[in-house]
Length: 287
Image 1: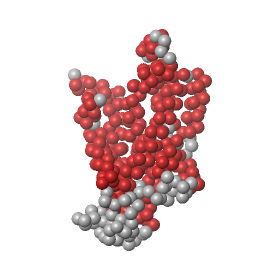
Image 2 (image 1 turned 90 degrees about the horizontal axis):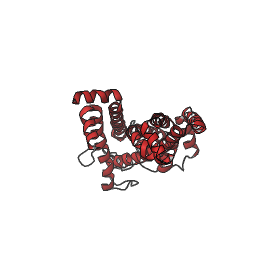
Image 3 (image 1 turned 45 degrees about the vertical axis):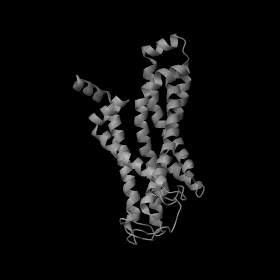
């Protein structure tokens, strides 16, 4: 594992820079645990103060410190994205492996189910569901919704890998030795899927963060919790731009771009590293 990470940093500048950005992001999220103010606290600092040594990112019209708000917002957005990724990739791996290994009627049924989910327009459906739950939405519910609609495309990739692995000699050896299907899938096939799963996890974070910000900016997220989307929403609601308080909107927008760039570079780096063509080039360079 350490050798793989070292090679990633050595051969993939995109992954290297993306990882550095994500380390900064996670440090920012961790700082929320040391905040001198509660997440929901109001009127604890001077209102509408511009950035200064005392308040690095300025303050809001509600008397909140923008920097400490941002730490809570980044943490909550990552929690929503993490929950969505765990659910979405968990379902995708399970269905993809079952479909690829069993084949036959199971494969046809599950492939049809996957194709049906793929053609569903996810963003409009999420907006519709969130609008129906408006006022009752929580961060957990938002993560669940995103995860339950983001498993189909990854499952097709896992299925194709398992279809290939099922024909390998080591699979036949495991079956002839008396190993049952679930054990074959978990012990023999799952380790081969982990690199692809890691790349999918990174891209899943990217997708989930984008959806959280989009829904919250529209006022359809958990408006009682700090997140990058709700920071932008309330900044617009209190007309920060018109009142020349640009720092209130600049912080969450810049953080959103920063996080998206970090996950995107990491995803590009991982995908390129796992490409068989680049792997062959690395082996030739080492040789």
